[in-house]
Image 1 (tube, rainbow, N blue to C red):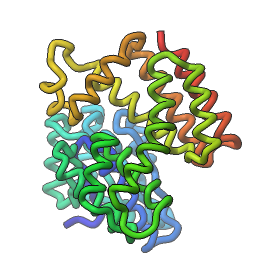
Image 2: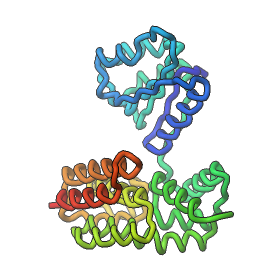
Image 3: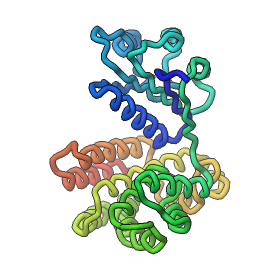
Length: 316
């Protein structure tokens, strides 16, 4: 194994982000002044490449995170291939590739060089998602019963990031082993009646209802992060279902999209009034609000209300 090269391969962004987080944390434990730089592969040109991989004058440790490696300009392949063959010992490269054959030469070079590879495949089977939740809970010093994990998967769906966020909320709100009663109580009250209700009203064009539900949710203690998480998940679902062939039944699409048929049916009911550009604009607004509620803004409530108004305007 090459300790300077890491590869996260597959479309599941949460798992890829975990590779970045855990690798960066391990490196920082070895070198507290570690500098981590993150870059989209498509943005790398000769000048950016030189900045990223130029030898350090003082030998300090650095980590370079290359996201969406498959999108690297083919003209930059020779430079990166040469670097992979002879990496700088002070620089750790963490490459994220969404999967597929695009960028095959780079993948082969990383593997040949002994990169530590982590698979980041989409979890399509409920059993895999249930095991993910149980492992996730254990990593935080807690347990979730199998039937509780299944209930959470049934309630939230296939999005791992949403599942992880919901589990985090359950861990914060409960003690001991998380059981099915806790999941049903949480889902029936704080998820379904707040974040999801805000999202449903907004995507269906009921902006006034969405704002009113948002204020009620926040007044009753819902974490603003749960609102942005619900919005982000629903918009991603809308985008994926919207780009899928309308001629296919939801049951036929379920396996391809990694969703339950009811999720596809729901998204199709919400799609009227939405365009690709509108969904993209809405996702941008959610990302801005998410940054604000996680500490990037002075007033999370204002950030959420502003986002809801902007998203409502993105719908035609």
